[in-house]
Length: 205
Length: 120
Image (cartoon, rainbow over all chains, first blue to last red):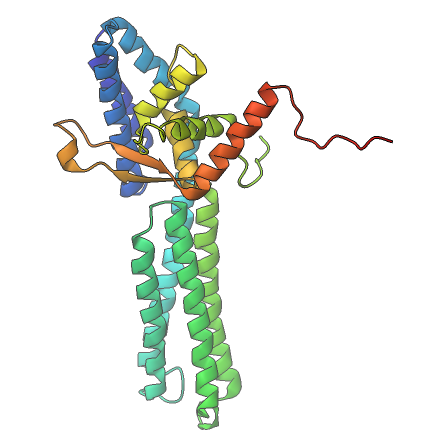
């Protein structure tokens, strides 16, 4: 029995249980396992261990890790779905805001410059998402996105407050109820997205 | 299966931190998966290496707890083999590892960490 053959089997198993997971998460696991297997073969051979014994040791390590592999995959798969849901809510809300701005206007009438404040909310989201992208994949990145969505919800709330301070509710087409209702609804959507990202982070732990 | 308390470490995770702590005096600081499995086998006096899934799942958890940090090895240092993922203890990880080792030493010495009752 050649150690290289059992190493290939362990590598194939790693490819199988990482299938469908986010690329960064899956590739990292596969690369770590592959270099571990090479290191083990080189180390044990240098120490004079026979090929058969090395091959059996690799098989044993793979078999003893199967339950942990399955549980790790389950956590990441569930977290990945929740993470995508969070991203979907955030992107869907942003598109809804843009559509509403173009179609009827959110604050005041269509084309009111006050609506440009919503681009400030998007800027907060883009900046936060870029910062989160530099964090390690998994819980740290999901937590970064949850914080970004919280910041977007806060910025969204501020847009409503600023619009009221600027007296936009006195326009014939807008009322306090409309301004607070719409900005509050968008803030709630971003809070919902933050909750989903936070849940994704928790499921990875 | 009951969920464990957030932040609670498993014996394997304590073992990993202890092995990571042992790399510090040699000046290496950073360690990789197989090197760690090998160090744990030697320290534990075991004949077998930790299973792949068990080891890397635990390393991932410790990283998510903020006790370890990791990075890919420089391409120049790989000497033709695949690059290794290098792990290092964070400041918080160092504290937790030292505390876990002290508790283990206290248990091994048969001492109770509790304060002795005052004489009547």
